[in-house]
Image 1 (cartoon, rainbow, N blue to C red):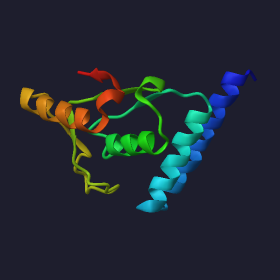
Image 2 (cartoon, rainbow, N blue to C red):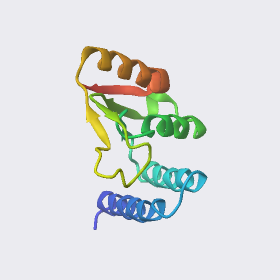
Image 3 (cartoon, one colour):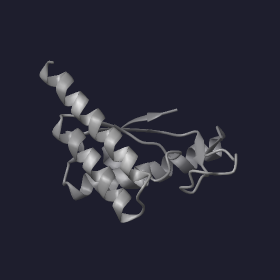
Image 4 (cartoon, helix red, strand yellow):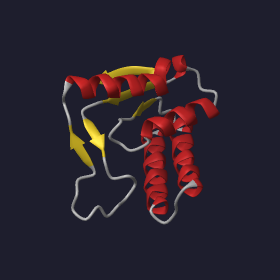
Length: 129
């Protein structure tokens, strides 16, 4: 197995392991597991990270992780997107209600893009519409 494939496998394995543990934990425990996954990705050479307003608190988490590791914006590529509003409030069981709702209005674009820029500012390299 070549080095890149081996690193990709290790990151995928770490992600799968952390994901299974996340559903057993909450709060600080969840944050610590997610940070370990991100650290493993960084160590494996991953430099592009994707987030979205509809992915719950992914932008807030990513911003905190980047700053806590003192990763400068020119050393990483970050993408985000708009169009869906996250509504699950971290509930896995929403009694059949959707976890996110599509909203492609100009007002929603304006509010979500402003929220993304307020959190990730200079880190944003790609904003998907």
